[in-house]
Image (tube, rainbow, N blue to C red):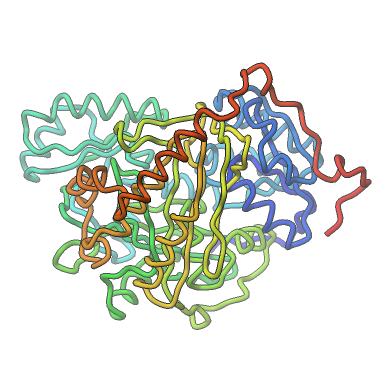
Length: 506
């Protein structure tokens, strides 16, 4: 188990953007830690830039020249006097070389060790570690496949359908379902090219396709002092093209025994891998009630708020305190799952046009409020969804005593949410909350494919509400249009500098 010396984080460099950057600022402030926000040209006027104590420009909008430029980020962090970097998720969060560079520069990396990232980031290595830990895995190859001839031979022996996967990445990229040998040649080359473009590696492996499964993941924390705990599971089955749309905790299909088994499996894997900090172990849960290890994400997840809502544990704070060398202040016996939480990812996409991204200016946005409603967002009226980055507008999260009550609360929150200027996925989420199949909890990974057309045609149960919503959206999309030259962002200063103070007040 890796051991950490205690080192207080004085000044934290946030090497990310959007809602996760805002989330990190809030956690750091509550811990009394001074924050510095990195920003690209596209994010000069963003909410995290306005929130942070200080800001640091790291380059143009192109992420390869800013948020993915490890050398510039480390150089800038040192220049700003930071002794720690939080990578958030995406960008460099699961880049072992970046974590190593941080260590060489004398900067704490708020996350797992480079060894953890490298081992668990390679799906074939992660699978071997899971087998060693006694955890069931999806049948498939234990190492990368060298060429399409080997893939063809393995596919014939394994049997179809099967799945090609990028060994070095996730998020659905470099992943192809192969239903017959005749499809393999084209699919193999396509998966390799996408994997190389996304992860810098064309290593591909093959595994049996488990159809009609649930996607269930378990949140773990490991502190380097021998304490490894899990905080229950999240059900992330509602996906489109391997991209999560809705997450909830706990899963509606697990009983207490199965919940304990899958949680303990995740904890054992983390212990066997000498894991440090926060991580997520992902499983497929089939129609017979068996679960299989799929992969491990060595970072905070987008959907972490649902776990926080049902456990009361602030995961970002725990990431920071673990990085400082502090032991966990909770044990496995302290973890209690209370009520039910659901998260909807509200993206700037047009569901009626195959979820085409719709970047642009948000003319107006009104977030829902009230008991049990949480919004994670960096959007505000007049802000932009840049075309260079992810299209997320907000994560809408609710918590209630039961799943039925959580669904009702999400329906209410979605009706309160108003977004003008860009099209969004809000209405499709509302439709799902009204769908009897979703409400029953009896669905699997084919849900969206089966019901998307139906959902598109029934965005609201009440046609009058639909007409009013369409009229408001049309008005907001054409109202107060300004030329792009009038919207050029001004290089910002940190929040405390704008206020005229000499130092931040906590």
